[in-house]
Length: 91
Image 1 (tube, helix red, strand yellow):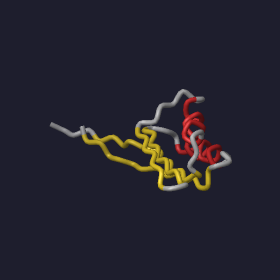
Image 2: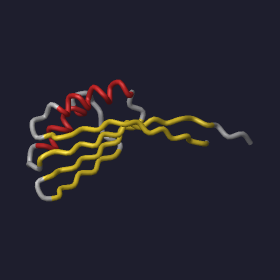
Image 3: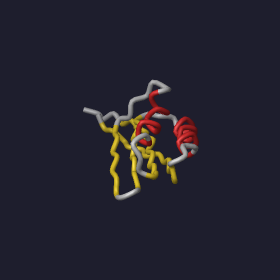
């Protein structure tokens, strides 16, 4: 029996922003406008700082970087990091 290997790319967004009730919906709106649903989403608040981590499986890195630049324009957003993780699946 032979194993089939495929590579899965995941775009990872790490957003640090000022905590406010409208920040999370504004961040997610950039994905929703493109018909995208995050594969993983984690948001946590520590005092006045909101940290949002989003993972998108099989998102093109160019699109991820573009969305990252858009997120960086949100007034309350202090920092956006965009990275790519590659996982090898063995089936």
